[in-house]
Image (tube, rainbow, N blue to C red; front, side, top):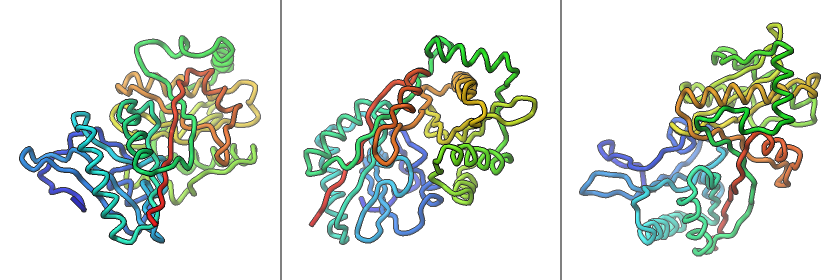
Length: 307
């Protein structure tokens, strides 16, 4: 069906924040189209995808890290294909000339991601971007057991230097953003969102964002803005540390605190994001994420011209 389901229909798949209405309305205004596959008798929504349509291009998502189809594990592959075929035809009939779909990192949902990759490629999509994503599996093991010996030494040195991890209130957002922006500027890098954009998104998704920091003598030395993508995934959206403490690398201590936060709050995955600049692999960043326990998976963007 074209459009959101009736309120009495139950969604029976894992929901990701970036596809929720509260995030979509904050991240991109304009014309959204939602397509659902429903089980009428059971009053269930078994598959769903959202597009922002602009200039005859349908984006899933608009500016978020990913969009794509969310669907029930029990859905038959041929039914999923039929749903997609109907969705694509509807978009074409509405005047859409191109479709762009950014899927989740495969580590989020290995089976569904593999199925969607084959489905999209077999229906005429091409890969417009391929990225390497890193994420730490959160389990009963301590953080130190997951990272390299060199990173353990850096972390212990930070502790010896009296650096401490803190969970911060969202009231510190402006300070944390300014700190991360300053750290990025020192390295000739920028942030993907302005402060007003991030602030407005968090207003809509107040319970989905977390701030973390490393302090030394009450001075902020490293910080993270993190996002609850789902009940089992925490995404390290932005992090940075002051260039003056490069040798100490307090981000390792920061990630230790975040990993333990995940353990306490039953998150299963700490997503460290991709390692690319202008669609090229940043090997220094990728190697660092591997050294701190990041497991690698692909993150794919699909594109199809409908002309």
